[in-house]
Image 1 (cartoon, rainbow, N blue to C red):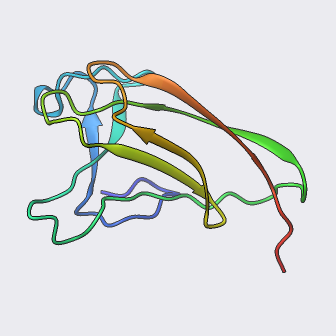
Image 2 (cartoon, helix red, strand yellow; image 1 turned 135 degrees about the vertical axis):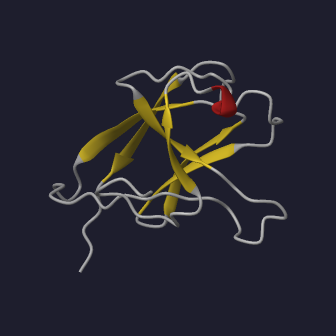
Image 3 (tube, rainbow, N blue to C red; image 1 turned 180 degrees about the vertical axis):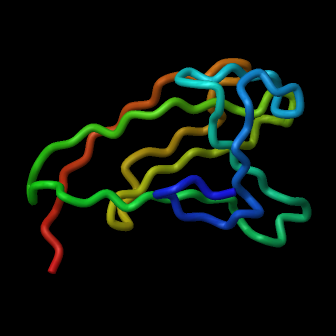
Length: 114
């Protein structure tokens, strides 16, 4: 299931219930559900990704992206969260915290595009 307003392969996106044991029992930070990314072995689909289009930004404006991130408890330490804005990586987070969601913040500038 792909939540409204998000883009991604439905096979890689799971809407998980907070505290769900199959997802490591991690408790969400805002509401009863959270979005989980699942990659299937032998990774025939490549990396699991999710994206969202944001519009209405002021060119050359300064912005901060905020979200919470967690690693699936008990499933290794090879996770990488990467955030890109207009194809430019603004954040790489290796091995997000396990057991609990932690806040992630990243600043970026909105550049004018034709």
